[in-house]
Length: 448
Ligand code: NDP
Image (cartoon, rainbow, N blue to C red):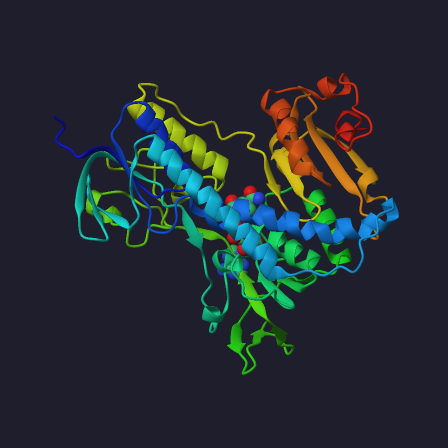
């Protein structure tokens, strides 16, 4: 008999933790998992999934406005936020149930309470029970980082935005990253007045500058107001419930809600890492090696809590690789090159590999091919928005270094284009491929 109650105790039932637990169990390990909020974690409960559903919901505004041009009579249109909110949240409940069933079917014991580390092989549940395990996996994710200004308690984060009682008539979004751009677009499409406040002159820093420029141009054309080089100094709640935001100039702005989207921090506070000698970096992230092992031999960590790449599919891969390594006799590491990513703004943008600037800095001589086109889908759009695709190629080897795009469905197209970049294909391989006509994706094989 083992000296431990479990082979694996996972803290956090999000994307990484659930994948690791079920794969470890399928390798024959006795597994338990603890979750203090809801099974599914950020992505399923208060992130990617409900966000994407809000994007879909908000896109009807534009689709309906085009419908008459295509011969449809849609009558009087109105939008009801509680209906969309409740529909999205009911699907979140469904998905949470499915995640729970996955754990159950793999005989993973679920403790629906907070667990903290008390030693290299022990965790303590909120109820007081102490549990021993041969290995502990920390997969507790990250949490919205809230800046420190007077009145920040009146602001919301992406955790709360899915549950708002009412749709804000005026919304201020602080930050210029993924969450800021996605929610600014959602509420703009739903008819809210949206102002984005960004501390520098750049948004979406990791994306190709030309693509981001196009996004900004389109977003401003759609009525989103950007206040660059601006920081919230203070938020005051008014008697009638509105918020008065001081941006450090003489023009305080009155809004209904302020959404803070200024990054996410690893959720290690109070986790007990110090009880097992698990080292953190200066941002509070758990330090791990390439096999996801921490500075304590029996404790591993995957996903956002390690602050490597804060993306769900990466956490899932890390969790899977951990389980194969420790319980499947198959040591595996993750290759972090060429991870495609997208911002589900409207229109969305997507990228893989090096941006033009990164490629020029690294390779010197690069060729840039592009297509600046009007998507057929936008013919009836009042905005006449143009798509932009770019391919960055190493002049010496002709290998594709990066692909970047903005336009309808660009994340869908990017997933496939990323396979080509990952496989080390050249521009010639795209040129040799016959266009699929009429599509937006065909622009990729017609780049000049
Ligand atoms: P991001 O890291 O994307 O962006 C943070 C933004 O906030 C940046 O513009 C940053 O500015 C700014 N900022 C940081 N600190 C401050 C501060 N103290 N005051 C004012 N502004 C500040 O974070 P998000 O919160 O948008 O998202 C968190 C993570 O979640 C992302 O990194 C991403 O990995 C993941 N995510 C992914 C999505 C997707 O794949 N589609 C969707 C949503 C989230 P600066 O550039 O100057 O540092």
